[in-house]
Length: 447
Image 1 (tube, rainbow, N blue to C red):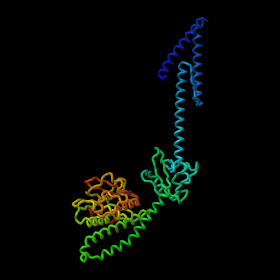
Image 2: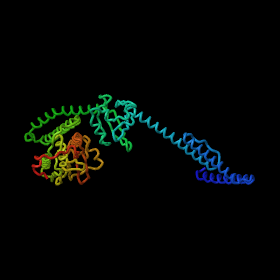
Image 3: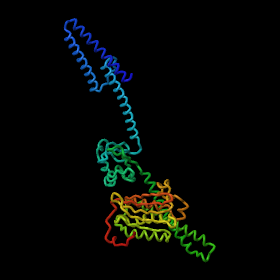
Image 4: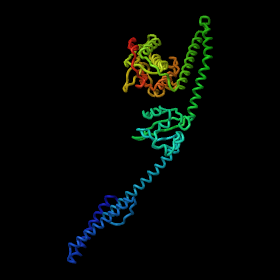
């Protein structure tokens, strides 16, 4: 029976019973000659019964006991029936929630990765599973309420990472507080408005494989230097005038050996960057850097492009001059190589919101299709293989740029549209910006 039908029937039954009861009391009172006393006693009896039923309902609700099914009629019976229904539904819902909670807890406990829940405000531990306890050396329940950063003694970047809330930038290689030989990674996931979830993963085997790969690439690249030097030497000894029939082949061999040499040098540079955790911190004067980039672009262009340099930031940077010059030069050379004759290459150094700066290299070249943009910084990834080989690229330039910027806590932003050109921007945070020295202000205007 629906609730509305039950209430209508209860009102009707209660009204009929009330009228019959008062009619009986009035008839009895008239028979005894005391009708008002009879009606008063009847009202008192009804009030006492109502208070007793109310006490009974409140007692069950206060003791959190479930009301039994009521077979009576009237409003009180309807009320108890509705309460019984709600209690039954709530108990069923509670059982389902308890089962789901137990299933979630069992799933979290069985996860091969560690999982922790921490407060966003102060990073204190709220909950952690068994894997996190083993990887981080936590103890239950003593570790609850402790700041997560306190377990990484000497690792200040963990505290800074938690404070910044970088959900898109995990910490990839950290020593475990429980065992320094175990390498772990941390990833921050939004969990609720007040809490973060931290996923801890054992990456020891992955880091070992990565180290083996880096060592292999570095060793092979280093060993290739000697045979390439020998090949270069013999090719230089062959004079095309003395052997005209070999001129074309010798020229092609020289070009390919030079490309191989450049590939080896880029591999060694990339291996060296991957092995480093930081770079020298030194003042980098941007005015002479922009002058140098302009000269390199014009030398590479040989007058085939319009080269513009705009210094709008009016400040300098802090970082490794050698590595940053290598990254900037890579972007400029790419823009020259992939821009047709008559195109324009613009190098712009400007400020961005938040106090940072960016060096953007914009060209009017072929452009990059959107589906290739997420992968262009991968090693040896090429948007167009034939065009890359014609231009002499190794496929490692953007990967080197990405690693250099990562070591400077910067990022590479790429915007491109097919047929309209591309913009590659090195974006630096305010921590890398410094006031321009007086000597830099006296340099020539590069714009």
